[in-house]
Image 1 (spheres, helix red, strand yellow):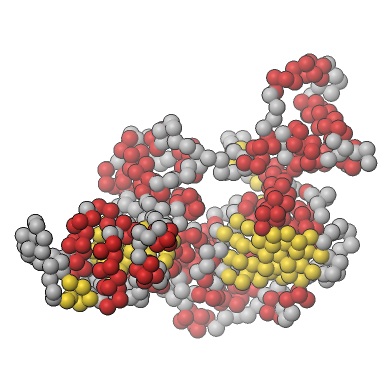
Image 2 (cartoon, rainbow, N blue to C red; image 1 turned 90 degrees about the vertical axis):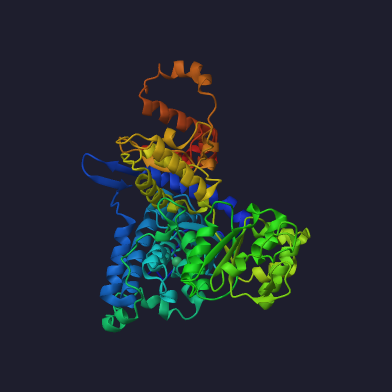
Length: 609
Ligand SMILES: [Zn+2]
């Protein structure tokens, strides 16, 4: 590790957070991402993939997770952590080096924002910046950021319950190596919260070693001499449930092609862990989330995790029962209690005795029923309608709503005391669009389910159809996905691949996602980030005709020659400012940067200053 701050690096003190930080960092990060994308190419003829002048290897994420697990099996947690942290550190140093070459005009604080672009393009995590404080003169560094979707967290699905021992070892090493190289000092990253331990994202802080205080624990994993051999008998004995690595969590009882509990994204797994944890208790649970996200499947899952699993699971949709009948439906009724009550019958509370009662759309519960429900929650007692006989309720309650109950309390339509009773353990099930990483698994699961059900045998799914689904917002969430896939499986002919027109009607609203893919020549294509697209909104090309006529008369009439002439003229017009020239030409700064480097031009020589 370097110990002295490198004097090559220019660095004005900087302290940014929130929107100010976002605005400042966005352009740099986009520019870094564009530079990397431009330097990425696939040489199909020679079987090689390149990132800049470096050959890269495309591996399945599963390969990495298997490697990680193999290391844990062979070396124990400490040994695996040490190996992965060091490998990550070395990779971070190499990438920082590449970034510094690609952005010679970036200041230190700008360089560190490019790390997130590397993460995104390598598919290892989405980095979100929270706070940047950097003052190299006084050797102060405080970078706060988080990772979403970190690949190392996916490994935990295979080994549920490992708790605090799981964390993003390789990423910690990578970020430490990347930042130490960019900043030119000993920067150590700590993961203060890891999604593998149940939080929704991995919260990290990077500081100079001297600012952390005692760093012996951090440095241990970077020390090449430290390679503990595990006491494997002990390690294995404490390993929980040796499930096969990385099978998607699929629940058989969800049925074929039905709203499945399938996924491996961090967002999905965080919910699954909460549900599993609370499932073992008797606490009431409130499931929140948009309609169609699968709240009832989670309710069933909570029931299945509990020690009531063998007892009834009774589901009541409060929206589906007329308000006047809801009370008798829930609590039962004695004969003659009201006109039409010609015989006594039990309610859902009695049916669910010993088991779980799931009340969907609880926000629509009428006031009288709210009062009764509150009493059951407080005293486990209730009476049938028209009866004085008090019954004992032995029911675990799970409720769900897509309404804002707190707002309903403020509006006076929902009892606050009932809200607080229900809100003991709220679980928010994320919408599908915020767990798009689960789409491929869900799609496969649903297609095979519906193919079984309808006896169909389509020949897979076209890449265009796949992309269309990734570009769609899924306002109706998993329920909508199910409907779309079910319809497609019915529409497609046997032996034909499912295509876009089987899935969507022509008026489906797709969005820009920043998704990119390779065309048949190995070039990266795809839509751009909204910010890029704005820059790329070039003026109407028909207006260039007059000078185009003149340009092709010139000696440099090759396309590259003309391009070079135009870029150089634009740079001169904007005093060598890459950003202004890029905006004017409707390309990214990185694209200009890449070209002038290729031509061996120093933009500073073009400015008048
Ligand atoms: Zn983590």
